Length: 391
Image (cartoon, rainbow, N blue to C red; front, top):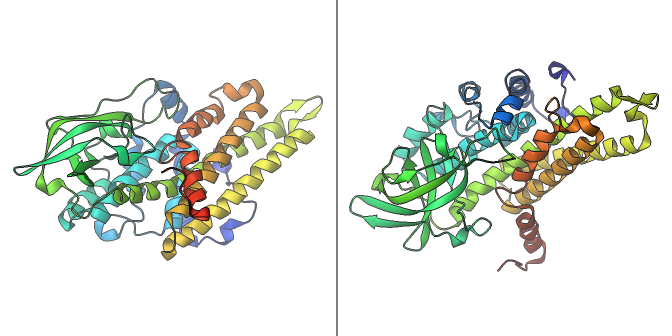
């Protein structure tokens, strides 16, 4: 399928609900993915490298911190725009969306929300322009779904803090100029800005991944790492602070994985219409049509869920549980659609001539990170019953 002619998947005419500005930004990102990402991403995936040369182009388009106020270098756009950006980037690759999601939701957001005015003035414009790259250090080797169990500690010393501990599965860690690190100070979780090159801080890259291969994933190691007093995020406090950041990231994932599903569906639709077996297109067989009907229905439902979520977020009435529902749903249907698409392409489904296997591998990670499917299920379960299952 010619990507220049890609029109998206819009069975319920959602374009009628988007503003002209929202559609224009989405289409600009769509063209960027078609022209800059898709021609190179399979090779970078195979080579297990992140295409860093795309970062300045993404910054020039305003894709980092688009929902951050203009005074701090953002676009000042609404959250529908942010969602559509994530949708189009993940249609290209989960690693590309992950980079933008971390930079925006897990680095710029906590600095904007919990940082001092001086920190905001210094860091946010540099992160928006990609002069600086950031990462987010919460998950630990022994504590994933239970972040409250973290053992990374900060100790107050003369002029600042000493941090000791380790973080794991950190997107952008090795290439980041600054890490937003969460550690317990006197038993209470606080956020710290740890800059690259700080003595006692290292960020080795993790190798051997079979998923998110076109993304940098790292460990963060702190050994008597001294952080000056001005590098604490003064308005952070308690586990609620990093969890607020994860809510922002899950929002982007909910939209992004819809883009992944759209790409898999569009690919398999064109393939089955042109693939001839037993004298007719594969798309003409009943079982194929049943699968395509499932795909377009689930994509449409996920689109509507994300659109309403964006409205709630912009209106200030969104709750974290709303985001859990959307993240849980989008990842589940994206994984199902990618798996079905692989089967429908037959042996061709495993070739890098098609994006399906790469997306199928990626969604295995995306469904897990920023809160597993099971954790989102229990969050929703507690919300509707009032009874927590994980205490």
